[in-house]
Length: 183
Image 1 (cartoon, one colour):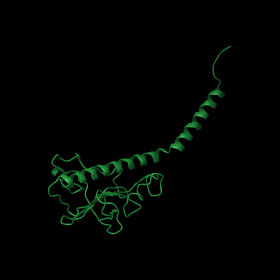
Image 2 (cartoon, rainbow, N blue to C red):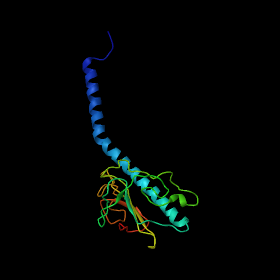
Image 3 (cartoon, rainbow, N blue to C red):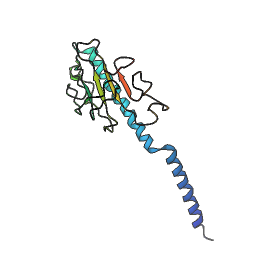
Image 4 (cartoon, rainbow, N blue to C red):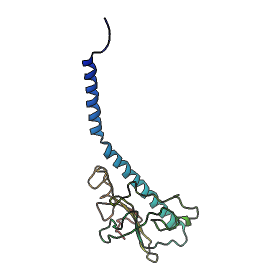
């Protein structure tokens, strides 16, 4: 007597594996996981810039902000009060980048080797930097971006847009002052 699998047994095992693979793919939703990964990168990028700007404000003898509003893509900002910004994709930290603050002036040097750009950087997902002008005290700034995943967006299970203290519940806003109000 020969030992082995019949064709019917092999087809049944293949069908079961196909059902399991489909179920796992539907439950895990790889597209949503990629969106969540990009959102995590956005939050990390903006927190790094926020930390660098905070270090700049406390360590530079005469800190200055231009009062400009820059977006890494397009000319429409996220804020409800002023919806225009200047597109700038330069990533240098010498004051000529989209964050127009000379982070190289920090006595220990810039904590960032380059300014990050949004992982997608299109007309829906981009970074924005706004500040008040030098001469206004205290100097304040705001960094904004839009979340892509349902998890981190307004109303999601880990909502960061409506819980960040800013004035726009549809945008992730961080900066130097609590209760951010787009500058």
